[in-house]
Length: 311
Image 1 (cartoon, helix red, strand yellow):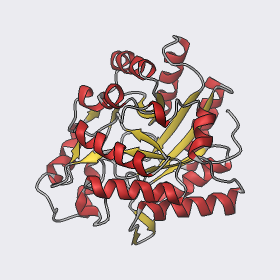
Image 2: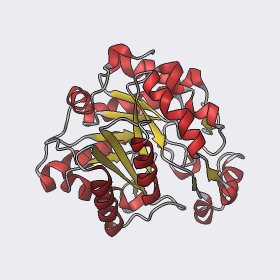
Image 3: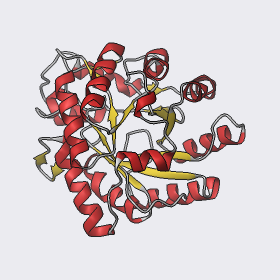
Image 4: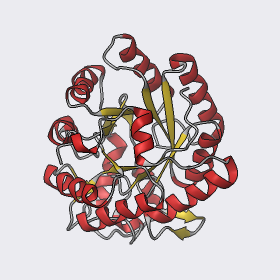
């Protein structure tokens, strides 16, 4: 893999997986998302991964004006790298998901490297009642939900990134997604170096196990050699074990309420910044690595810079 002495910490602020019933601290409104993103950056995150939600109900939303408002307000207050999602949510079309790239021209955006079953319905077992009417059917409907990014879809999506100077962070939910990335690299549709995000613990993707992370790293090393870097998402209680393992192995980490709502067992995180601060502490104390600044990450990843975005 590509060597980088410092560790990159990404904070995924709200996502589209957790529903408001699960935590009163989940950011919903633009004000809340902006405040959480800026505080996460102040705590040590060099990248903030951004979804938006309906301000009234908390339902995941593709509303481009909400994305523009959130991204603009974060940029006004912080030099953090703003990374919108193109993964969106289970209630969105492909066109709705990817519109942030041509419209906002961000430095980075996520790009899921294939289709998977994406089951959120096990969450239903933990709750008898929900705060909003949309939450139960939203979760239940994922029994039949396939997140779609086919080869044809990716042939359309990936060139959009290059056209608008946006680096794709390649979200790999299973080993097959690494091979998909290699396929597009071999065809010249993706350009090296690649930045991979191993997303572990989603029901339908690879499990959140240390052995699986080792296998993902070994597979990426065999496929990409010195043409890649990687970061890790560990869902739920595996957030900190897997991210610490990743940083110990020379990789990077993503934390935040999109992936995990708990600071420790039985204790809800009140702020995304609390999760970032814990990751910063573990990085320094356990691995001995320091934390990369946004500008250091820009240089390492070859990003175009905040002055070249369209927000």
